Length: 127
Image (cartoon, rainbow, N blue to C red; front, side, top):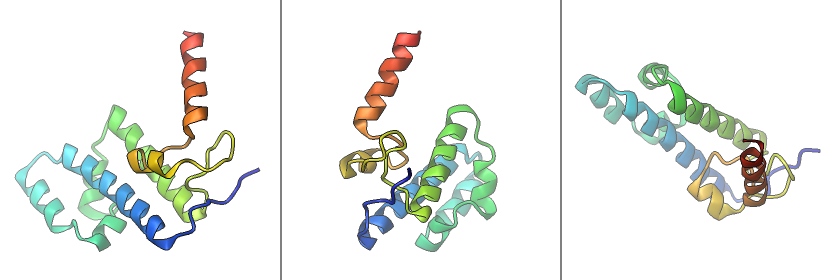
């Protein structure tokens, strides 16, 4: 059973849209290899572009990501999809609300702290 997000305040939803878009831009800056790439990013960092960061030059830069950065981008994309579908801020394990403080630190969080701790403990025990 999937629950809808308990985050109903439009200002808070906008905050997390901005946080996730900023995280995508941060990843793009990490892979920008030339001054021209960096100048293009700087020119495109308006809010409208941040909301559409997957297109154009930013999308091209993000396609250069590998390894951990690719995983981080995938998590950001998944969080943006949850935000738009109304499932953002809901733990994928227990279906309870994820604390706002946790989401502010980790905007792409899928699990509440209790379920995250449980998952990490299980992984450590399996090793």
